[in-house]
Amino acid sequence: MSYKGDNLMSVKRTNRSVVLRALHEKGAMSRKRLAESMNLTPAAITKIVGEMISDGLLCEGEMLPSGNAGRKEILIELNTHAFCGLGILIHLRQAILSAAWLDGSVAFSEEVPLPDMAPAEATARQLSKRLLALLEENGIARERVVGLGIAVRGITSEDGRVVRNSFGALAETDYPLCALFEELTGFHCLMENNVRSLLAAQMFLSRDETAGAQFFLRCGTGIGAALSIDGKIWHGVTAQCAEIGHIPVIRRGGKPCHCGKSGCLETIASPGSIREDALAILSKEKTPLLWRICREKGEENLSVFDVFTAASNGDEGAAGIVDLAVQALASAVKAVIYLVDPGKIVLYGSVFEDAYYLSRLSSELQEGVDARHRVRIKKSIYNQQLEDRAACLLAVQHFIDNGGIQ
Image (cartoon, rainbow, N blue to C red; front, side, top):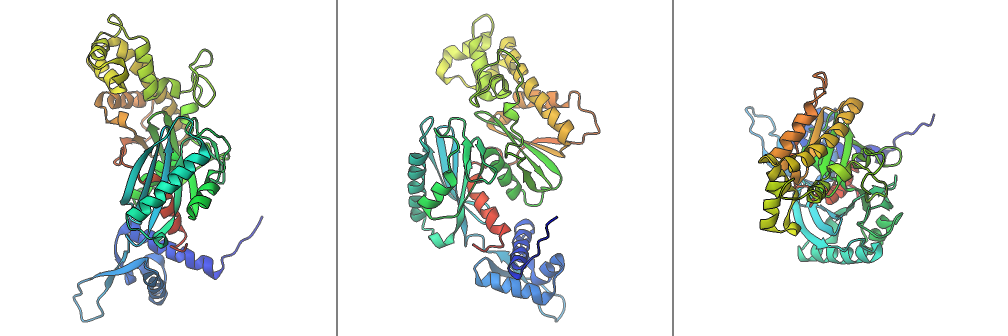
């Protein structure tokens, strides 16, 4: 067994971090209330707050009304627009460059198209150059930047420095992307899988609603997931926890998956796969309503939502494709329910805005799950709103955890 003590700087960081988290989660508080909540003396909290005001992290707000002649209390607030985190989110064929203030509000955001299998070094140079230009265009001094978060599709290394496999977003595997962005921008970088970044952003914006276990399910181009336990995201031994989209569900004869295997859940249940499978049987006889929609719009413009529309209006062929996808996805999620016993499952993605699809999935998730599992299954209140904040909030959260010390 090893033993590790805390030096004075470590204690200082911890206390400052607790102050920042308390003000972020609960809002403005007086010095007295901060001292009580942290179990510190008024003198100690006065010193901590004073230093943080001098650093520009905190500011004094309004004065609380007092019914007696004693000293009136002044509210202490986060100086939310004093510092910001930068972010780069790398998807298939797209990146999002953004910045977010300490309260999670967006300072700027811009989408940048990328080619398939984008070359990592050239892409990093392109994105870094544009990000620094956006920083200047928006009048944000470098001194106000607390770091750069990188959220990337696929698998990252255990230490968050290397992209193991981005599944087609970047051409290279096992690439030290974090170090390259640090060299190009001059900012400290943190890197995380894109879905875990979305969950981290959800937790940050939800403030204190992070107790217990929650499972975050994202359906987009593919199917991804992340798991948090008592407010901390669980990575697993190889940083591949909750790779639910790549659970093998077809043993033989399954469609090839971009991960290199075949028969993965993603090849049946992802929105793209639902569309592909519907097009594969498209005909006037098998899918009459979808066939009619396709004639009006053209095959290239047909979306997964058109499949849902046809299915919800009685197209049995389209409904069969949707049901197969929903059953496969629900079976995987029910395995999570029985294995992890989460208190909450958060659904994230545009498909969950479709009433027909959401109803079918909700019905399947209830089938065979006993009442003792009191899991809440609901669409994220930030659905489709986290992509421009997820990466930069990695840097903001690290800054807060570090007590606002860069």
